[in-house]
Image (cartoon, rainbow, N blue to C red; front, top):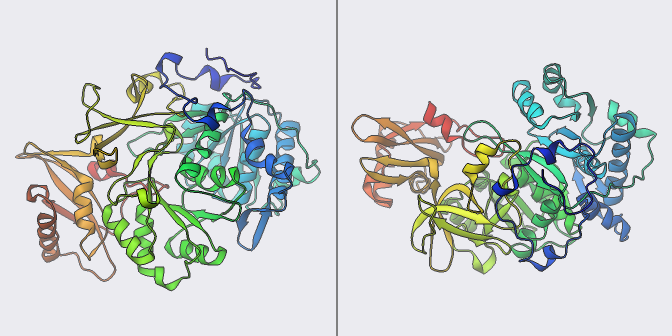
Length: 545
């Protein structure tokens, strides 16, 4: 059984007991980056992201914006402290218990997240739109004993609770903490001070479930030091953050992309975030203009959807725009840059590694490339046998650094994801002589047609450069003669009619843009594409269909 290097605070050892065997972990080096090498043996990220600002006299600085409200750091800390008292005093939480958090992005979700960590618990934040049948296996896998849920999303969790006896305590809350829910009533007479539990740096802080683009979700375990590490890498070395910055974005906090972007990163540096429960193109643009946001995070499809309306809003406050969660097509990068003058920062991350590990910004951006391994990480390409490939080749991407994959009670899957100490992301990339990585495809999205290897994203990028195409997804479908053919699912821009003439026009366009054998032999026009709540296209659903 794994033993923390520091003094563990966890009396409930379920998470520690269900880590993969130590020999199956990837190599994780904290010594390569001076800031990380200096971490103490005892870390509670609630202290380092929240308490530290109040203690330093910055309690009056804004932390969260929500509609017309602004919560200062002191406000957020007081609410988190009161919730921590409820968890411990009223609900019997002991350090190491798992607490399910369920809400759209709002201030109380952030407060509950900090409260759980302050009390020594482990956060299991779930996507807000999951139904009861999807919640039950997550609760069972993580043996969740407690839950805090937005009252607006109560119904499905109540149904799930009936089928999960391990979940013994549940309280509801409102979006901004001013309602009359069970949690808010319990908070009312609790003190606003709470002694944050002194957890070990390698006590588990959260269990994050993968988004399930290829099927069932898998739980990934991340330590307190891991959460701190991502705050000291990507935002420090790729984008710069100061106290005056205001961030917004579409990814849910249950998605580690959203957690880092809207909570961990800004609060490490004393900045603030805008919480928005439902994001669409208009909402995002309105939010940027209203709150004078300096940075946004969203998926490539959202940037493309905003293009038609960027001229209707004052976006002059924007300094940085980060794209992640899905491959960023070069056509989208160029269109956004032309419309706004801002060079999109592309980022490759994974729930298994917690956040972004390949990126580039400023003058280091090369349009079409994802970037290079950021400081603290290494990246290389390997062949089918696991041997490293020199630059100029295509191969499977392998990554290692201070964070890495630890699946919850899933040693079989752990062996698939980790090879010789490296994390295998499931992506195929090409690397140039300067170390820049160019996305080719997901390993399981390569299409083999009549003996040719065809990368779906390359065909998608060609289609996206046609003026009629809003978004698209390309998959391989079975064909008796060619083994597979390329099929494109295309969403057209408003007012465009998908007919036989347009089908041929799109096929001819692709033949003119890339090698003709790669053109989509079948095109289906659709009103929308199936996506996860984080904006990733679920290509497996298109293949199954």
